[in-house]
Length: 177
Image (cartoon, rainbow, N blue to C red; front, top):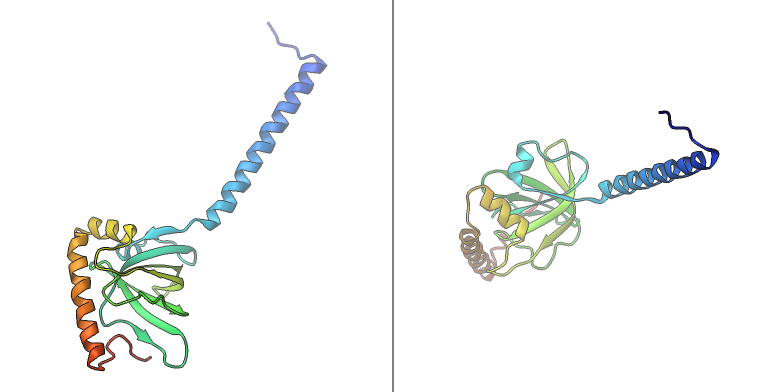
């Protein structure tokens, strides 16, 4: 038994195939546009392992390593190291850091990983109190075998040392290029 298409059925088939093709193109274009706007989170250990893409917008996070914040006195350029206490990630940022940015605190940086191994940050996100750690940072530290409570205690100790240094006029939180 062969199926013969009448002109009316043929027309309906073409309309349905055209709508399916248009829907497929629309979905494809939407997914392509969204792909460029997705910021995936990576920890320093994942970046060191080569899991993060180069020159594409990503988010990276960890703790700001104590003694690594270096400010250029002639501009708003800042370099610092983000760590998950397994691997480190150098970050270059040009702009005003959040008021709550401190050494020993959790941060999330948004930017592009460069082939030289540093992250050129467009944005630095920091929140600071002894009980807060960004969720992505906490998860990355747990995956590295650490407990966030350990780092909250360490962050509190670092903050006390830094406050003591600032009270003495030490200026331990900034250096120069």
